[in-house]
Amino acid sequence: MTLIERQPALLASLDAALAPLTGRAYTIGITGSPGAGKSTLVGAILQDALAHNLRTAVLALDPVSPITDGAILGDRMRMNEMSGDPRLFVRSLGARRARGGLSLVAPFAIRALDAAGWPWIVIETVGVGQNEIDVVEVACTTVVVLTPGMGDEVQAMKAGLMEVADVFVINKADREGASQIQHDVERLAARVASGSWQPPVIRTVAPERHGISELMAAIAAHRAHLEAAGEIAARRQRLLTLALRSLVEDALRKRIDELARGEGWTRALAAVAACEDSLGSVARRVLTDIGDRSPAGGPPVTP
Image 1: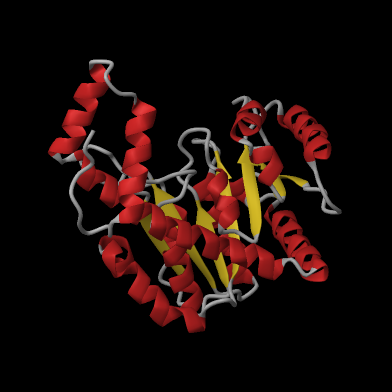
Image 2: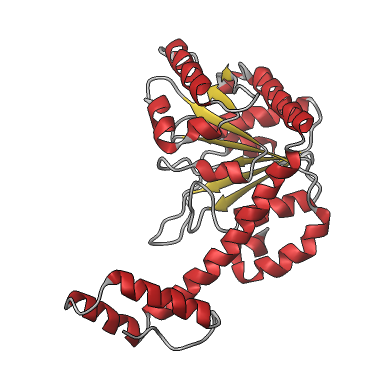
């Protein structure tokens, strides 16, 4: 896991070695806005897992400063208290170059946990901003966590979370407005639901573990639905798609960085500024250059 996080250049070779051992884990994505109580909810899920003797791993994505590259670790107290139990594995992962709530290395970290034999893997996303929908690419079941009084149902609509949720959780349901947000979410979920699965809306108070058994039952019901429909393999295939896309995007990003440091890039921008060229034309030449040359070499783009 440390190699995956700190040495992205090894991702491809590490994954090749682990690949034969993957394809068995069931992944659960937990996403939602900041302050929704995701970490506390995951802690309650782990307590329930221990009560039922379920071996569970957690991959908790933390935001990383773009200036210092330091991680802003979330509140993992409830998880850390249980992390000494051999039936649990809890790992924070800095969301460097995160997109959609995940990081470049997240798919590979998930595959490593799968290869290590963890049957249940819970992925908690960063929870910063309104674009958290990439979690659906790595999760068999996606749980969207909302809270009363924060306008979360509106934020969920903006982020596209209504369309990707398999289960909705109204956390901190002891607050005023819980019934209203449940009504609103049920109405909106019914409007966007596709297929035969209707996402349930579960009310929880995570610190007291209220509603956790109902949440686990809803996750189990969704898994049974996927298995009956023969969709588990397709859900797992999305993780592979994201992993492949991550490798390709990283290679392209490095090549673009090389080009941006070259003199040709500076001359091209000067030509655009002087209205002698256009950004679209320069961009097409950059793409041609990337396609024609290996990522490691080749001269910079020239106007």
